[in-house]
Image (tube, rainbow, N blue to C red):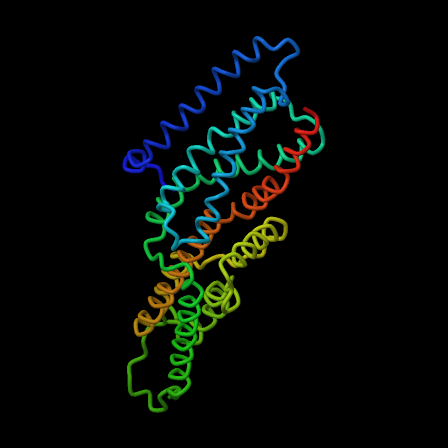
Length: 320
């Protein structure tokens, strides 16, 4: 969710409710902690009240998942649920700490608190990322396309580049080499720099351009979640064993263009265009996976919380 003036205006109700909840719970906790003879405890009635409020917020935040499953249901707008999810979740961590008296308790409570901590701070992190990544996409990826179409368009560009090189190589083979004029009917010209032809272009294409255009293309029909996992795994491998093919630079294309016959410049321009588009698509994928990859951490942690919350409540009631 991008937070801007309009978003803040639309979320005023949720923001006021969240701030009031935090303010009332904070005042009540410090009064209770000051009066508690043996210190604050999660098993006391004030502690249980804080726990009930915090649990209610957690369950409401988790209910956003159910709301997304039932998009056609008339349960209010999904965006409004998202606003409540964000702002109420922000105050949930302090409320739960008030419930626990800032202690993490036994093994079950520790596991629950670790899951809650991971879920909470991964959510805050992605909220920050969501304020940055869309702006980066606008500025750094002007050729941005629909995410699901990235690999499809990249494969089409790769096929077009292959065909372009094959056609020009075939033309070069079809033109016969006339050799040296036997009768020397022309005036010898002073030797100058040799102009490169289609064979040199093909060498550059096979060695520098094509490996980059083909790099990272996932299997046909790969889901977005599988692509996120694959990208994270590839990033980890790349950090340990650097082997990525760097994109051909603009300087390389410029140097080759100066050495080429001008009839091949349109071909080189097309290859440079495919390379730039592929570079931007790679950046778009990386940013999109950064934007959505947090779910691989946030969602499992939230499910651990939902499973352990009833057990925690049962254990708390048993020791009242």
